[in-house]
Every structure is written in C-alpha cells, then in structure tokens.
Length: 269
Length: 333
Image (cartoon, chains in turn brown, green):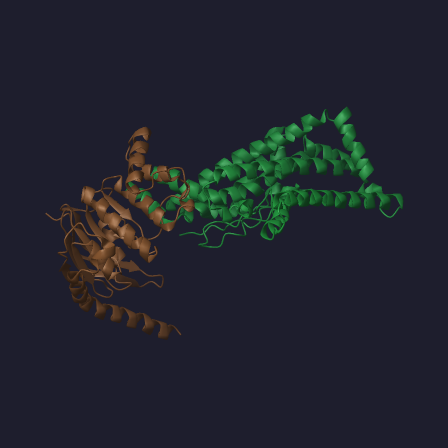
C-alpha cells in the first residue's frame, strides 16, 4: 500500500471576483513508503496545493487524498510540513521552537526539551538554544524548521520549496544535510520545487506537473546511487542524461506558463 | 467577514488631560492592512536616541563614549534652561502685569500651592492619599479594561460567529461619547471609587479590544498552520500563537490606554467625588484658584509619565524576541 496517494483530486478556490480558480485538476500521484518524491512544475501549477491536500490543511473539491490507505479528513498530525516562508515562532527561542511539537503532543516539558536539544545537535545548531529566530541566518532558521518537523518523527514529510529563499551554496549544503537526516528515519517525502537540478539530486522519483490547472504530465525514476552529495552529483553523466530527459517534458510547460503570465500582463496594461 | 473599525480616537481628553495621552502618537492610526505590526512609538527614550544617534554615526574622536555622555549632559542642561526660561518669562509677565495671574496662575503660586500640599496636606486630607486614590482608580480601571479588551478581542478575532454576532453592538457602543457615561455612573454608583473605575474601564476597553481583535485577525496563516500540524489544539494555537502575535498590537494600545484610564478617574472625580486629584483640581477651580488647578495638572503629568515609563519597561521585556530595528530605541545601540 502506498504511503501517500492522491486519487483524481481536483481543487478549486473561490476567487475575489466571485469566480472559481482551478488549481489542480484530476491529479493522481502515489508515493511509496520511504520514497523521496520531488514535484516540479512551472509557477502557478498547483504544486503547493498538492501538499495542503495531503496534510489536511485543505480538502479536495473532488477526489481523495489518502495516507496509508486512509482518507485524510482533518489536519494530519502524522505529517511534518516545512514551509516555504519562515514558519518558526519568532517569540520562542530556538529550543522552545523545536520542543513545541512534543509539548503539543502531551510530552513532559523536561523530556521535550531534552529531545529538542538532541535534534538541535543533529541539525548542527548545538549552542544556539537560547537564540531567537531573528538572531539567526536564513539557513539556520531552516534548520530550526527542519528540526521542528523531524522531532515528531513524521512518517510523511511535506516540503514546500523549503530552500528557495537561500543562496545557492547554502542551498546545496542544506540539501545534502536533508538527505542525511532523511536517511536516519526514512519518511516518505513530497518535496515541491521549481528547481529541476535540486529535484533530481534529492529524489527517487520526479513528477512533472502541467502548467495550471495542475495535473501529472510525466514521472521519472531517478536511479542515481545513494548516499548522494548534492554539490557533486551534477557532474555525474547519468545526472545530465536524466536532466535532459526531464527538462524535455518540463520545457513546454514552463514556456506555456510564461506565455500565459505575459499575456495576462499585456491584457492588464 | 465583518470588519470592525480600528479605533482612531476614542475620546478627546478634557483640557488638562495627562501628558502621556496627548503626546503619544496614536497606534490606532498606524496599522495598515497586512503590514503586520503597528508602528511603534519609541516612547521612553526618544530624547536619548536623538542625542546618541549622530554621535555614534560619525564619531571621529578616540573616546566617542565619553563624548556622547558629555553631549547628553549638555542636552539635559539645555532642556532645563528652556524650562527655566519659560517659567521666568511667565513670572516676569505676571510682574509686568501682562499676564493676569487670576486667569493664568503664576509659577511662584503654583510652587507655593504644591509646597503647601506636600507639607501641610490639602483641604481633603494628605496629598499622598489623593494621589493614591486616583492612582488606584486608574490602575484598577486600566487592568480590568485591558484584560476584558484582550480576552474579548482575541475571542472575537478567533471565532467568526462571535464577531458576526457582536460586531454591530460593539460598533454602536464605540460611537457613544464615553465621557457622558461618567454622569450616569456618578448618579448610579455614587461618589465612591466604583463610578470612577467603571468610567476608566469603559475608556480603556475599546482601544485595547479593537487592537486585540485586529491583532488576532492578522496572525500569519503559516504560523497557525504550522502549530496545527505540530499537534497543537485550537486552544493551544490561541494561547501559543495568536496571543503572542497579537501582543505587538495590544501593547501599542496599552500605552495610550493608561492615559485614558487616568482621564477616566480624573473626569469621574471632577463629576463628583469625596477624594482624589480630580476633586482637588475641581475644588481649586471652584475657588478660582488657578495655581491649584495647575499644580494638580503637574502632579497628574508626573503620574502619567511614570506609568508610561513602566509600560515601556514591560514592553521591552515582553517583546524581547523582536528584531531590534522595530523595537524602539535599541537599534541605535
């Protein structure tokens, strides 16, 4: 049984002018237990919406989202979610941020803090327990967010362009560290990104979405050996071959999405 | 969604209103939709910042710190000189019969009245008692009004049905000129403390309420989603995410609110009381003793400024987590 399954889901949103906007349409996707799945697609193709459906933050308009074969009804606390923007609590110290999950789940404070210290060491933030998020760099805040999610030992980890705000070098380092952390507990991952290189370097499977309304255009198995070092894997000839293949599928969608936005801009002006 | 208005100006204070209420920039006008945090008045230390800023930025000498200190001392002396000059001008004006002390009082008279109050007590008993009574009324009113405002504001901000149900009533209540309620309270509850506390509560409540309400509405959706996914219950989200996030707004309203509480207490006393600074001002007015009115005003100003300082301290403590550039004076350091 698949860990995550989206069965023919459609998600429509009401727009401000009273109409409806279809973010994804008739999308089907499965992620096996322990699989790292990357979802790529042009801007506005509903990548992030798929994550909100799996986590239960939104309900599908049609179709079903299932976790371990059970339909998602409400907020799914068995999932970990790493947001695109900072979602760590700015008024909590780093330690309290990471300890939040266990505390919300009813653990004793002393245990939760001990666990949080351990996770902070794992993400390389030992010694920063008492800082507030604004005192950290963007990369460090991402580590806090990662520890905050992973401390709950989620079987499913959803990541919404988590590293898009970071500079290129930090991004590569963080990606390698993410793989390392993922390897320790092996949750099923859905990693949304618009960066194809990042997707191939990280994932077991890359799913390409069509320009909105989003639906699956193609899926690619990534059979590059693990463990991988993100900074170096792009020099592997197999990486280049995969990149060419997937880019072929992605290119037309990107062009289409771009043409649409520029058309819109022309209409507006 | 129903939009309750952010409160712009609750009441115009009566003349002789506490200095803090008049001089603090209104936080109500500041929050623009989506901006997140209200513009904050760097209350407490604007003067120090002005003094320190330029010195730090082009400190050429070897001892910028001591130069800054000297400059600060110099500024304090200059300010004192300005006050002394104005008072002297006023006194000279009285001497030259340009200013009529019957209507405008005179510095010497104000000083004499205050000295008399301190050493011999007032017509209503010792001065300390008067100050304590007024302060007690204001503080009680402030606390009750602020707590009510925060609790109801957050509740209505969090629960859509509640806000839909009560928004029209609150809008209507907010449009009543609240000072008028003082007359009703005085008749209904008599000359004791109760009527003053009530008036202070009513004055404080709306400002805090609308800020807490808006603050609860403006919480970052991602933060709420994150807390929910981490396993927080709705109540935990309110306590752990909504409340601290709204605190930036609430604290901004508390600055002004203590001024309002003081106004409530004073106006209540002026309308009818047995004790308090307001009564002291009122009886001086009845005796055409402008020096007494002015002396009362000075005392109220001192009380208000002290309270303002304490609230600023509280704010610094509670908002430690914020980056310094939005945090009053700390950024200059």
